[in-house]
Amino acid sequence: MQWSAEPHGGFTRSNSPILPIISEGPYSYEHVNVAQQRRNPNSLLNWTERIIRMRKEVAEIGWGDFTVIPLDTPQILILRYKWRNNVVVIVHNLGHTPREISLDLDLIGENGRRLINLLSDDHSYARKDGQHRILLEPYGYRWFRAGGLDYLLKRGEI
Image (cartoon, rainbow, N blue to C red; front, side):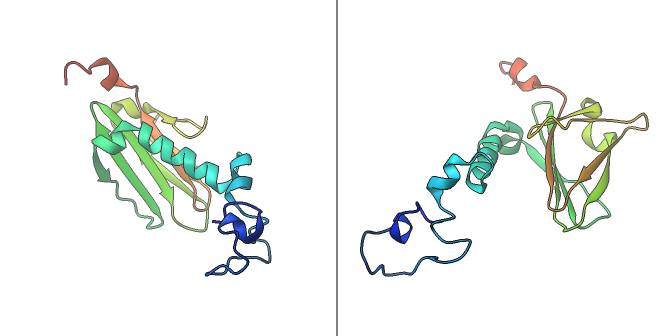
């Protein structure tokens, strides 16, 4: 990605750079660059920084055991991470059409009656039949934590 809207994308002050940069069209350095994206809270750069930060903050992903939860829909990838009595469920729609999926409480555990969305306020509550119904937009994703942060309370015991 270009660094700035300065000539040659801020890579060099030379009048003849060794490698060409995108200098025309909607993806030129004048329209797409790091300096501009840092100022835009909805930019790809800021989204990438937020998702990396979230990944580092979710200890279950870094330290826990993971399981791929099988589903009949090959476009959906569900990963369950378990660590110190906590479960994180990550759901990805890898397809270009919206999908509604059903997550069974048996796959998550009893603490999974309430799934706390780690990326938004879009939480999920299990229905009476023990199912979570989750609608995923094309290429959408959700990161849920089931239950609380028990490992913080039991830190000395483990």
